[in-house]
Length: 248
Image (cartoon, rainbow, N blue to C red; front, side, top):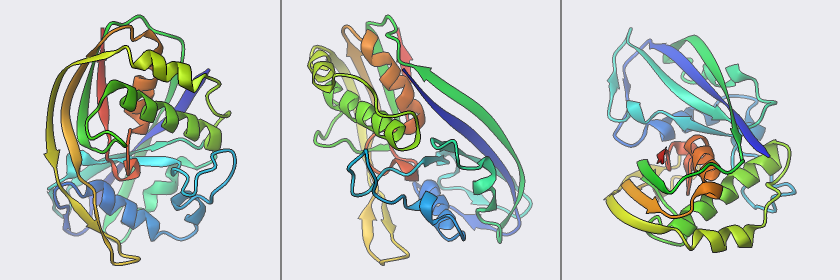
């Protein structure tokens, strides 16, 4: 049982000033990508079995938080990453973003594969690097965090890979309830985005910070490692829910 994706890094050179407000880099890239021709099926996938979801997760996420609040000058080089979950999408699909504002230079591809074999661990430190929203809890209680990681990777596999995770979801949740959150240091941040399509304003903030968990974590390590690439929680396509994990 495995989960795979491609991490694609795109390098550009700005042809004109590009101003990126704080917290908006992923949202700006998503908006620019949505304007490209012939990408409708990638940008807004149609509802389909086996997910049963009205709005299926997109087969990609942006990683561009390092550009937040940055004013890119003409001639300046910059880069961002896209994590691709559908093998059928050509890696150069995103190279045309901002084609009227920046010159595409090159791309690099790293293939990632997570094996879902248990990994011995008693401690997990999870760093929430970009604003994160987890439902229904307002903070990252372990059973909620793992449930969101599990559901996301299973749905991505179902829609774009070999199929949903062949696991017993209820048993995994019961095991997660035995893991304790022993330390928590969060900061809540607020950002908003305005849809160019509807004109509506949506909150895209959430919490950042660090949570430390202790317990029998062997079964959960692959879910946490997968979430480093998929993101976790709401609006991951905009770069929300980016985490980094330290296991011991």
